[in-house]
Length: 369
Image (tube, rainbow, N blue to C red; front, top):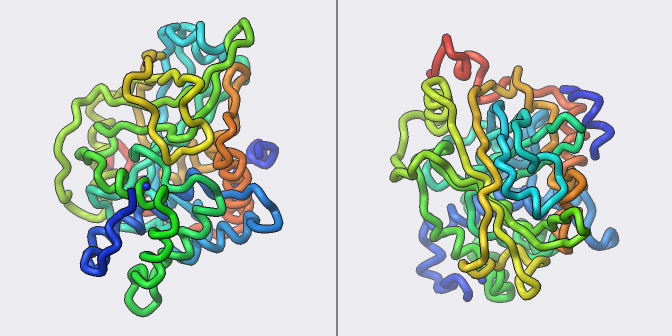
């Protein structure tokens, strides 16, 4: 499937390593989910002689296999559209036009982590929200944010090695403890981060979940002052407890049903960092007392299948930033940008079968199946 021409111009404390713990499928499931989800945040490289786009994408394929025509990660998803309305509260922090009071259109995408486009929905699957904010001056802002508290690797090389250590055994279909345990023991920051992700609170679905940037960016104001920031989309809908659901696509079907009933909203909450806060290590949280700014409200009004949706040809490259927002020294960001483009080029030359979320499923007339 060939995507729109404009895209061609874009470019842990240790987890328990006791053998009895490793036998639990729950732990193995967490590791697999993390492998897939975190590729969205660390699929790239810093040292070309060590890592390339090809080797990183090949490592992801070793986990989930090859599915031509689909995104190499977050393969199962659907398009959404709506707008972001700034309240002006962040205009003093950044010159980005998106923070001026007013409304800008949004094309977004909800997805499950992983490279499997037909995986079954489940409460603990890592969920993502990707957004393209398009102010009239062309200073667009793209983001891909996840419902996990931290990223699970500090560098692209570390993530690549994590993928290989936890890839499924072809006989059992599960990670091999003989590979996983030594890797975790040698990488305590990864083990700690995976532990935090495994303990995150779960909600009922996409509509009542919080999505975080994980990586650090910098806002630059009219005086040229630059501050480190992270952000989150916090739902207006109060979170409710998860349930097993009904059917392999229930998370998406529930979201479609909710959007047919009423718009869904999130607050864009900006967290202002300090000079002592880590900016190059997304496995580390910032202190909970950092000041926050409610910058405005995201409103989503409609859903579409990727087979006919507005998001199909968009790469949600986190390095597509407006004037007034810049990348930090986080090595994951440029690596992720390059890998997204490589994935785009590959799938553009492939024939894609119908998606799990079909046009009929997403249609207001057809309703969820």
